[in-house]
Length: 73
Image (cartoon, rainbow, N blue to C red; front, side):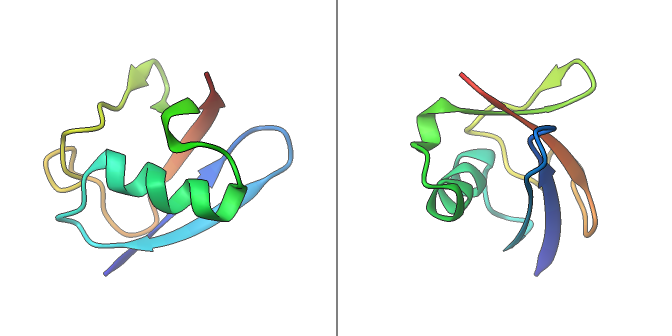
């Protein structure tokens, strides 16, 4: 189990525990439960890279302590 940090750059930082085999879409669903926002309106980025919902965290080489930037679409 890994823990990733999501920062929406508006003052809200959320830590989420998930498995490396989870997809980005699964991560968004866990985030939406904590944020109270629909998961299909969340966009996860790091720099200029936008993460796609169907790819697993392990395939993106996301490990414990990774930081995402959260945007609302």
